[in-house]
Image 1 (spheres, rainbow over the protein chains, first blue to last red):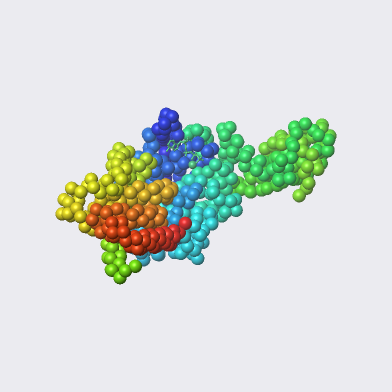
Image 2: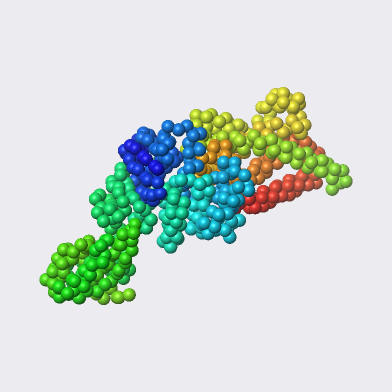
Length: 352
Length: 217
Ligand SMILES: Nc1ncnc2c1ncn2[C@@H]1O[C@H](COP(=O)(O)OP(=O)(O)OP(=O)(O)O)[C@@H](O)[C@H]1O
Ligand SMILES: [Mg+2]
């Protein structure tokens, strides 16, 4: 559906040329939700803007729906763009137009008749759950509602592709979740190909099928989300994943001192990650049976990445040093990922 | 206050309103496209063309830097060419229009610059043409601000029209000088000043109300 080959983008700036993208190649299949993750300045926005040619690549080819956009005239491009919807971090709605008129905007651009527009806009209003707000102005809406208008507007011209540039970065976690669910829902209902740009691994984990990690204008790693999650190669990918996991450190521990040496009256905190099959194994029970330790589960979460079970728990263990060593050995020999967080004073962690 | 005054004042007010209104309409019709051109040819905008932008900008700045009273005298030959005479209310409108076009151009440019580029970009991503972006994005989005700016231009025009009156253009300024100043009619002087104050208050009030009504932010 989308094929980028050897995309380069160089900006001229007063302090010399900036190579924002270097030899980027990737392929996005029909119906996929493809995530692109990277730190600020990595080149994510530049990359997604190359897909609809808001930014002309310095060299390379952009093939969308088997048409080469880089070879098109401005006029041909304008037609091609109607096939590619886009939503933005800051929504970019017309402040002088109502919700209805914002959604109708792309249709008016193509000269669609008012009656036909109404037939198009009303179902879209229902799809994004804003039928009762159609006569309001964007200033009267919450961030999440504005993004829903943005989504409806992007869908009005029946595109085959939806580009999302940090579509949830200005929203709180709750609203982010509902917007991501809406995007996923649309992807399934309309079999739309979706490209999602983000700096949060959570977004990738929640809705994407494939992911490309971009660093300094280069793709550091790409693959299915489950592959990348279970077996990250690049340092940057590992960092994104660990940020996602450490966010889950129970609030009681956040801010308390974690030492790498045993302290009297402390737990040793371990983070265990189970994937796929291993999520079913009774590993903890086995550990308690074979070692003389006590184990408290402090945090647990089981969810799915593209329908593969993905469990994460944080446990605190206490016992003789030798027994703790034995327990660590036991865990290492099991089919799971283990990370030693460190020792934390027990009273620093009131069991919430 | 004598009985001869009222018809004089009414006539002068009528002339001022006529001069300002007609000049304003013509200057707006030409000034808004100028402002749009200044904006869209500037850096990073939809029809970026820095050389064109610099040339237009230089002309605008040149006209704006000439004090109105000098501009008025300097273009007398042009005025005569255009309307056949250099005195009278119609002749006075020529310099008023010429002085206001670049003023409006800059004001409109300022208003358009306040429209976030993201909205333009969204329209581009939907395949909008440059004309559609001007008519359906830039002008509607900037309209509250343009309205407020145009109010300022009308107020400036009232002041300039008084100056134009001094060289035979009629209107309140003319009245104030001929009667109030040259014939020592203090009552006429005070009455014109009061009328001008009221007129400007009304314009400002109407402009503010309209801008507020248009603003949906
Ligand atoms: N118009 C421009 N002119 C010059 N340099 C630019 C321009 N746009 C982007 N860049 C540079 O290109 C690089 C990539 O920018 P880009 O906006 O694509 O990053 P990003 O990954 O989207 O970052 P963020 O998460 O902050 O949005 C940056 O170094 C940026 O400074
Ligand atoms: Mg960006």
